Image 1: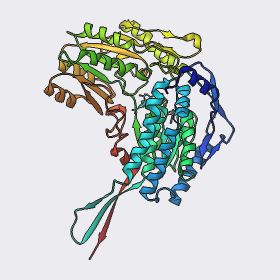
Image 2: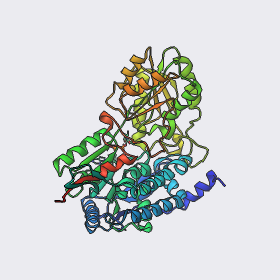
Image 3: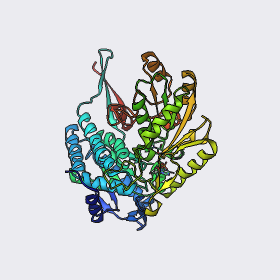
Image 4: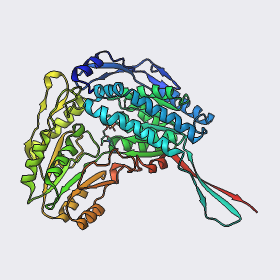
Length: 496
Ligand code: NAD
């Protein structure tokens, strides 16, 4: 039976929330006892005091991870055994679906319908997927001279730090720890200070599933533990998802310390191009609205720039406005609600600042207001502007429910506007013509291109995910993600 709003509220009222770090197989307070208040964006209520990890905690977590790696308690386990433990962990995540979804919703303001159907199942699926992959992916035998045998094998890099954002807190973390752990590494995860709760809980479940101590550690806190991990000489690799500004700082830290491998998944300003021969304008309009209003627009691949051919622009914008009516901000614990709260006051003010800029630069055609202020939470209506391509809101990542509509007159112009950005995470094009579809897909400079859809396949781990240009480097998801967490070794044996 599906759960009601009242059921979730009751469950929230009695939920026990853990705020300690998880280091070397146990829950720990920060060494100096510091905590920070973890607030819910639903109503501004303090959910828990969470360990504010500093240098001593980061050192302890990295040392535990290193000890586990040197002891080979995980790395040298047979792939089949590692797989069994990871599968058990994913099963435990599913068994704790309601608890984890509730933590995620309270912490980040995402609708409970999404955290139960998407965030938590997708994170468990990610762990499953890499667990299932790891006993099926071997090395290579090089085709060398007959007096030699050449082996090309993959080995775990060692200690991996994962620093992640708040928009899909557990899922973005799973995209890192799934492949990193499957490959045999030890991991230190630094969740965002805005959404640390599910990371702490799944660390406990990892231990319950049988991950040896020290293999998976969680150090909550703000930028400081992230910076310390990036600077740490005993971290071999740092995998980051977040803003370009922080990504740049992490690269600098790696350069100043031990040249650890740095993998960055950064922001986007993704174009969604609708050509006049779009095969289904109704579906395209709903997809355009979903592309920017799902998850309150807090999506790195959000289709935040809607490029529409001038001939169909007015009619199409009307359809997008109608489609956006599906998104009415409401209490995230109500299963009927499709739009929750913005993650915190800082992000709310950032979004409202961009809406003000939009009013000055363009024409507001829908939304534009903060709502439900009386709840103490942070809610913004779906907002749509018509703007010129050089408007600030059409160039900078907002990470909120704000859509910029831009008119164009030719495919060449659309591609040129689409590619005129420092980012390159995703793009979409809508056309009935196969040649146009292929040519546009080839010309769009982005890690993912959708044709006649938007975000389809995002839940499928087969597709590599990542960006061109300042949207990052390396790829999450797919077997290619294992490249980030493994070193390639050539072993050459002389036979005679
Ligand atoms: P952010 O860069 O502010 O923070 C990300 C993480 O880095 C947090 O855990 C934060 O505590 C930590 N951090 C902050 N300062 C640090 C420092 N100096 N050194 C090391 N770590 C530090 O980003 P955010 O606001 O949490 O997330 C929003 C951004 O993330 C957006 O730009 C969005 O596009 C991007 N994002 C990208 C993807 C992707 O896969 N490409 C996915 C989700 C979000």
